[in-house]
Image 1 (cartoon, rainbow, N blue to C red):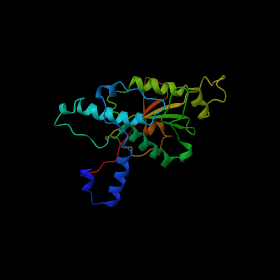
Image 2 (cartoon, rainbow, N blue to C red):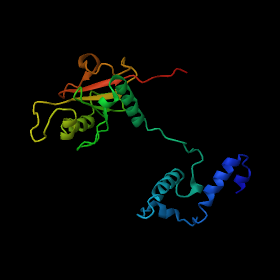
Image 3 (tube, rainbow, N blue to C red):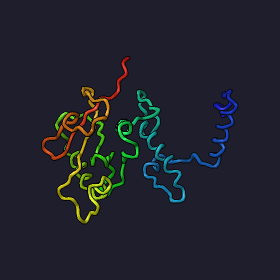
Image 4 (cartoon, rainbow, N blue to C red):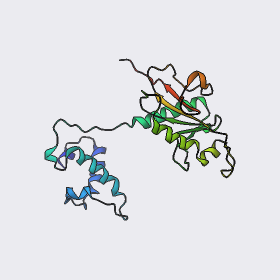
Length: 218
């Protein structure tokens, strides 16, 4: 209430007052220990997200607020760089191909591949990581599963019926990752495998494509 009295913005004051009134019947008699073992009630599912936020705040401060580290600040937001890179690559693909020609996060039987391009009969995956070695075996296994998923093969037009697959056909698997030493800024030439992609020698029709991210000089 004392904080509200110091507000000079009438509209904000009224808004906060309404919000606070909605908590008038909410008890502040809470056992911190119970939050750790809280299980959502099916009748009050909307509380689940609030409890999740409470857990994150308490995790930052320890369960006892008095034990909070003095040098630890609370970040206003966290950027999911892997997801941001996915969207960045999606934007590059959309510039090269029509947006309807790029299938993003297709619901396959095995999982959700980042991108499918039926015109190229290719499965693409964006990896926000550094490739110091030739390949990451977990990435190879993941994309190999996509490349043999019946729903994906149907989506890219490789097979008409999963009962009779084209045994001699394997789509291309392309791993796109950031590399500031790369000369590739866009995805204009995905068709030119030999020029723009690095073949992963131990695996058939697997390629890596490093792209340079935009930089801002200060």
